[in-house]
Image (cartoon, rainbow, N blue to C red; front, top):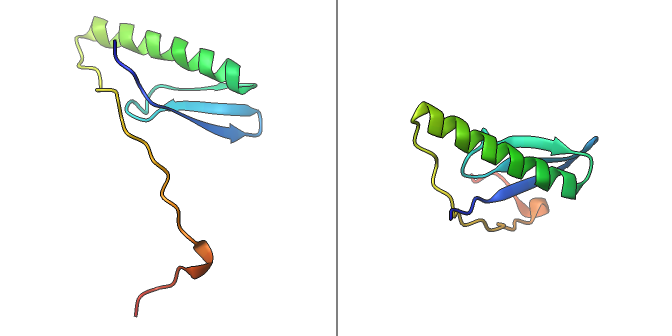
Length: 78
């Protein structure tokens, strides 16, 4: 079992989902749940395609963290 990290972005038509470790696996859905399901389907299709082509699949299990920054206090170093 391999776990991949999904990133969801709100877009005008709903949500875009993409795998962090495998950026080619990307899809859209009208809501978050539909996007999740579509992303799982896209991942399965990509796994099958890579297996058929004998290509090595990207490793999963990425670590994601948010990095805070106070935008108002960012300035150019002099």
